[in-house]
Length: 338
Image (cartoon, rainbow, N blue to C red; front, top):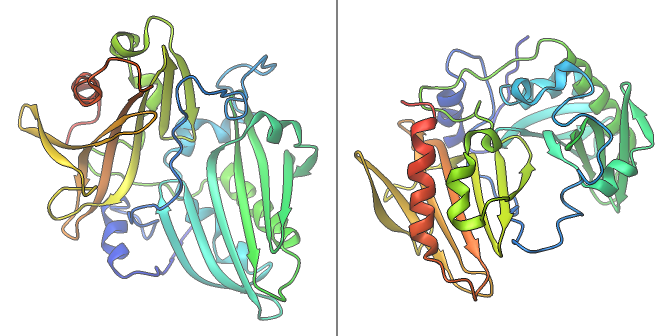
């Protein structure tokens, strides 16, 4: 297997080399602009946590090929290689903004605009799982069509629900979006069941770490109490809620700022042992402190980070940034070391 994606930004090429050392290609480590996935503590999470009264065994995929530990290392661009995309048109440039997402901005067979985006380990809601009444490549699937876009999710695990998600978009006057989405998704699932290209992460990379498993209950208890509720999202993020507060950890790719400040409000904080992070406090109805630490970085300042978040309702007496620092200090020794 040989994937040779080209990227929209040349700076991403150096980033790809960082995570894909020893591999031909892979998604770049450009900072993702996807919406924040934080769920406020105390909010009704039933629409985002579909594990209510689950019938399937927790953490068990419908096929071993879709196990989370395996998916974390899969290069998503390898699932929509040229031979797959050529079934619906003419492939163009590949672009990736996270560990699990890859897109191609191409042309359909009529020469019109067609964009294809794949996400693996995508978290489904209970409603999406319930609506998975179709079939794609032998998997339950759900479809949603919005104007010139189509979203198709092939269920790979039911508790908590995860999927390989395909989004296809056609321009004004373009063709039907769902049909090419189904074809590409079928090819992607076929490759996923085989031996697709994997990442070769650098030392210190957190890409293989299960974010829900690495955090110990004793780390959460001072803020959330004895029985926090875990809310996994995707393959690289986990949140816990309890007692009007929330804690969250996420591993992700990022462009590392020269000054280390990921936010204009960031301030440097010493975490001991020569480690430093950058924290930013956001006030409001649910005051939040975010603490970011760099785990890997290459010469072009592309790398990987871990983000710790502590948030709580306005009335809760809590030094959120102090709690975020304690959170980080408890977890950092358990992460891969550079």
